Amino acid sequence: MQLTARHLENIKRFIPIFRYHLDHAEQNEELLERSARQRLFGQLLAPEALRNMTELELGQVIGSLWASRQWANKGYLIEKLIAANSLPALRKHLHDLLWGADSVGRRYDAFRRAIKGLGTASITELLAFVHPEQCGIWNDKARRALDILGLRDILPITHKRQISGDEYERFNALLKQLQVTLTQLDLTDLDYPMLDYFLYIVWETGGAELPPIAPSGTPPEAEDFDHDEVVENLLDIGQWLGFSAEKEKLVARGAKVDAVWQARIANLGVVTYVFEVQRRGSLDSLILNLQRAQNNPTVQRLIVVANTDSLERIRHEIATLPESFRKLVSFMEVKAVQRAVELIGELAEIIGRLELVRSEFDVRP
Image: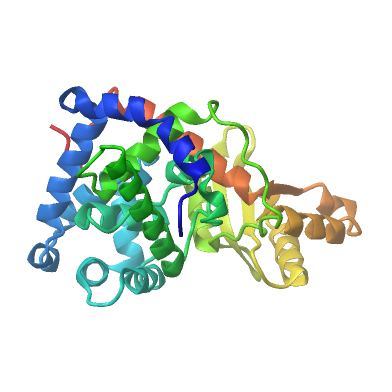
């Protein structure tokens, strides 16, 4: 994995603004927050501290993650996480993730398999702030920054939100190359969280400065996604809209659906919106489940969530079914769900700066 002259030229464009921020670090809230986070995680996620971690301390860690910013109610997030996994299991698997003897990629994969409710962005944040000399942060801003720098040609996974342990190790190897390059440009002693800050600066300031990335000869593979993560995203969106949102809910006989939004409206009583997330599996089973859900008189809409190609096949299958069913069905792309969650996160970040409500898990001074 080697950076080219074109990559180097792109990187150099952002050196002046990055250097300016470093020179004014004592007045930079973003950098001060990163330093505070590193100190906090060093205390709360040390091996001995993890063995005795309390719910409050877990909340301070998870609630401070950038990946958790879309949650206005951090307490509810922590309750969900503990209910899905148990506090002892979270302690154990966090210890194995952060301090296990295996490679970081294998520890990452094992944690993702064992723990529900924490995706790639959250896991890599934890790793980066505990092991700042070897672990980077994989999130939307970092992915987009890599594209802006033209680095997709040597790391062709920037379209993926959720990555494997092997892909994470490849990302860290690329960050090592970036670190070497910045050192050669007289930007020394940058750990991986600071490399993440460089990517943040690229994302924040550089989207319009660079020409579009030339497409490679091989078209990108259809983006895969994590089924459970998309279901959680739907719950997040529903709750932000004021609905009561639940997952894996039985809405009619034989119809257990991925997610529902419900609300009580004065003139209509209870209204229910049903979501089914289709990643793999039989289209016949999907359609049958939706038809059964239709038997619930409160159901106002049946929404199928999938990638573009899958939605086309599902539309084709449903087009031949009775009109009474077809009119109830809507279609939503996974990327639209993901974009909605991003926007919620941006809004939460803006509102959060007002400090209207301080969470019990808030660690800011």
